Image 1 (cartoon, helix red, strand yellow):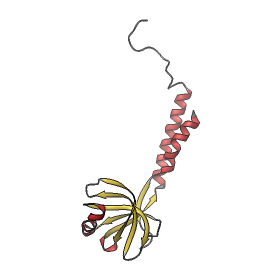
Image 2 (cartoon, one colour):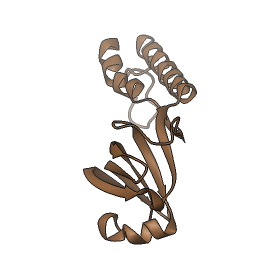
Image 3 (cartoon, one colour):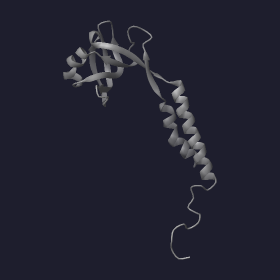
Image 4 (cartoon, one colour):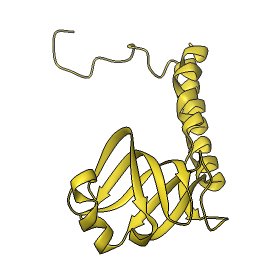
Length: 146
């Protein structure tokens, strides 16, 4: 029973928590996961390719130089904060349309808190199962003949 519970929760521990932080270099490196915040002109100019009113584009860098960043897009976000997943379609974003680029990094603190919460829940569930807390016994609280 414990092994099954661990097997079900292990993927949650592996997901971790991520944040976006400023790039360590002026130009992102191929393979880096980034989030690009577009200028208003960029949002307007790229609307035929990525949709109207898009403010942020997140994905993996395919190529980058001082003139443009080519992304395998994973997600877009509009000005209202609504997100939409993509399947890695390549989009070229000219640098003149980029307000900001940030790198996606694992948040050690956030991942530690998530892992601790999951572990505590697992310990509590295991203890409850071991003490019979999830078994069907107990008194008959409902009506009925006695």
